[in-house]
Image 1: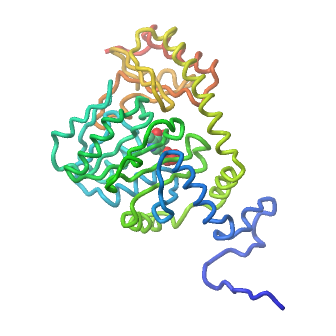
Image 2 (image 1 turned 180 degrees about the horizontal axis):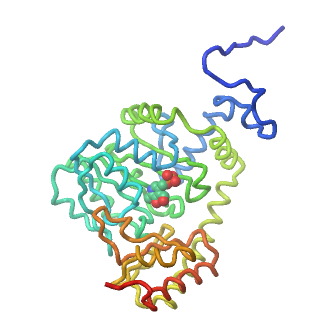
Image 3 (image 1 turned 30 degrees about the vertical axis):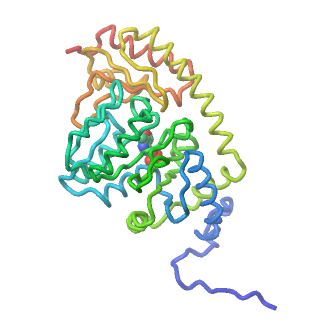
Length: 350
Ligand SMILES: Cc1ncc(COP(=O)(O)O)c(C=O)c1O
């Protein structure tokens, strides 16, 4: 008997004969590329690794976690709304919330989390990176996490927890895993542990909120790229994702030490705290203008100037140095070049 076919006269799918022959993946329609059900199961495992027992209807795969921040801001933030953010924080999040017209309230994180927002009224949302904070690398202490969740109840705000570095520090409990009242929307990303080019983020929220998020996502891009999802799926299925994560922890630990030594040797005047997590050192050098230093050295070494991470333009004396990508000898050389630029006063020091 002939197999019953369903003729697809619905979507505007391209004729398979036009696909590049060497790239099999293009032959698959979006639905055929992977089993979404199985992919979801693998994603739920990642979440369980962070202590989060989500249901399938509570998760959404985003195009990078920056899209998760955008979706959250689009859903909840209108012009003039108060959003409390760490001071300093991830530059991409500052951009997104600014684009929604948010009014920022500071949560200082140097040298530790200061939840002085308890004195503030009318906060609509709080955006935090409690594990391996970007750029400082600090972890929010458990008592502060509990206090933040209590404040959310008391003052009626919603929290966006950005766990971009959390897979590298699974011993740190997520706010989402401690949240009993559906106050926390959670996002994480595979950018730091698989590849940023794969553009895959994971978003978790209670079902009612998630339905709104899904509609917004549909309007932005209509869904994730299936080749990207396929690659992620196969790395989760064959375990190479988890092997890579174990390797990442070892490699990053070693390189964190290399950078600490280089900082002590070449920039003894710098002030910094040893990063508990994350991939960066956030150092401060009295009297410098890090943007001008970058301008001078950028052909030989690049770093992120501190001003990117403060919503109000503060932070000239700060430099964010990443130890995750470069080889040990490059870390040493790079910091030596920065140190020479400062010592030789090839930049004006105001
Ligand atoms: C805290 C934080 N959130 C989100 C992102 C963006 O990640 P993605 O590549 O998933 O958009 C980064 C990347 O630097 C980050 O540091």
